[in-house]
Image 1: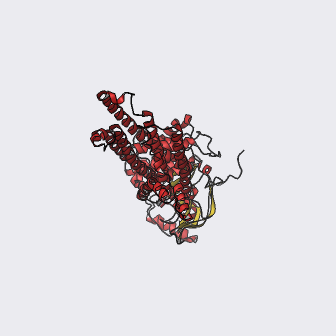
Image 2: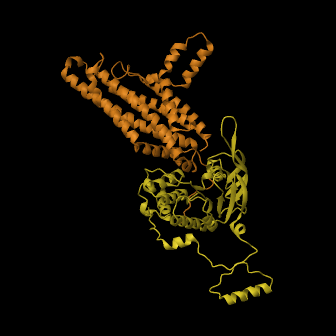
Amino acid sequence: MTDPNPAPAIEITGLTKDFALNLRGIKLRAVENLTLNVPEGQVFGLLGPNGSGKSTTIKIILGLLDPTVGECKVFGVPSGRVDSRLNVGYLPEAPYFYRYLSGEELVRFYGRICGVPKKVLKDRVREVIDWVGLSGASHRRVGTYSKGMLQRIGLAQALVHDPRLIILDEPTAGVDPVGSAEISELILKLKQQGKTVLITSHLLAQIEDICDRVAILDRGKLILEGAVDDLVGLRDRQSLIVDSLPPAELDELRGWLAARGHVLNAVEQPRTRLDQLFLSKVSRPKKEGDSQ
Amino acid sequence: MNTAFPFPLAGRPVPFSLGRLGIVAGNTFLEAVRQKLFNFLLLLAVALVASAQLFREFNFGSSELKFISDFGFGAMVFFGSTLTIAATAQLFFSEIENRTALTILAKPIWRTEFIFGKFLGVFAVVGVFCALTTMLLLALLYHRETALMAANPEAFESGRIIHYGDLVLMGVLQWLKFGVLAAITLLIASFSNTNLYTVVMGFFVLVICHLQYLARDAYGHVASLPLRLLVRLLGYMFPNFQVFNLADQIGIGEGISAEVFLRVAGYALIYIAVIGGLAVYSFRNREI
């Protein structure tokens, strides 16, 4: 039977994390009284400047750090427990994997660690490698991969055990716009499959495009949280995009609006975004991941 | 991706697994043998063992075969200790510094499995090292003994004088000693911040373990009770590596009883278990 009130993918309550700086008891507070819920099935952006506590929060979610105060649960299981990580896939920032393994060996290694049964492991490894577009490079040593390929093989190892929650720490750091767009596409596909994705990134335009909700941290404190549309949309204003409106008719429209008590605030020429222009002009590499 | 690909991971308990421990150990072994350091030390040790017969004119009065045996085991101990400390520190800190530890510990794996997996990986590497150098030494001794038997048959009237089985036991004991040393190095690494500190401390403890019997002999019977207790405590804290040095008893001599061998092996295994447990405890509290 389905639970009518399933536990959130991530449930953080009153979380504070202090790091001891020296033996005299001086501490650095990395996260302060953070309360945050990440509902299942959403793409959630965790934003903030460097040193705002994002990575510390992620490490606590993954059980790599213990909270000083408060608690963190993953699908209802305290994050310090090993079984809380059964349903979590993690791609670290600037991933560095075992250089002496091939891509396929690497994903197989993590699959075995995660307990993927032997009888399905081989197929599963091929499937995720194919899914991230690295089939053609799966037998090459990871040490020869480009940054974009490292991110993609990192995504494959994060997905090999079919987790419900995927945590991506700066997945596009150091990746060119084409690779970055491809990672965005993969994240949206994960969302379509019902996965929950927690992502941190400094590329705010990318976050805006793919996230349902965001939280902004600053100096360890939560300063803003909500649905992206609610946060960035200006609800008391509308924009109309019209093809080839002559000046005379524009004046007529302005008069029509004024007669009804409205003001036409701006008439602008719409612009395409630079990243979209870039992606439309450059050729995308082959899916096999052979781009360098 | 085929989303209808379920396997029952969700909601199951995650007990301690020897399988996962073995996977970490296997990967550690693979990483070690692909490092230049391992190959270099192995090559150097093999060269030194093989060169033992070149120095047989300088046997300082002891018999030639005994000299070759001592020289060979000396090379094994020197390079084996270096390899054990350097490889353990390097294989541990490569995970921390390259942040591969983040990725692996974010999986459903116990830190106990990770630490003992690392230990077993290093132990396997050192085992290969000991096996190769021991086999080479045995071959060398056999070759030389055969030559001497042909040249001086009257000196070998009662057959071969080398106890080859005992030499194998000596190789096994050296391997176990390196296991204790690897556990000590891993314990230091579990709370240390740098590779260099771990290596320096590892060699420091190695010297203490080799020389602690001198302190016990010198201060073990002094009148002052606190000093006596301190020396005894240090004697338990640091394993006595002299107990592994049976070269005078085995090989070319009266041989070694199974009881002595098992007692020394048990001594090593107890220290490995206790020190390994301390390393796990320390690593569990480490913030990655």
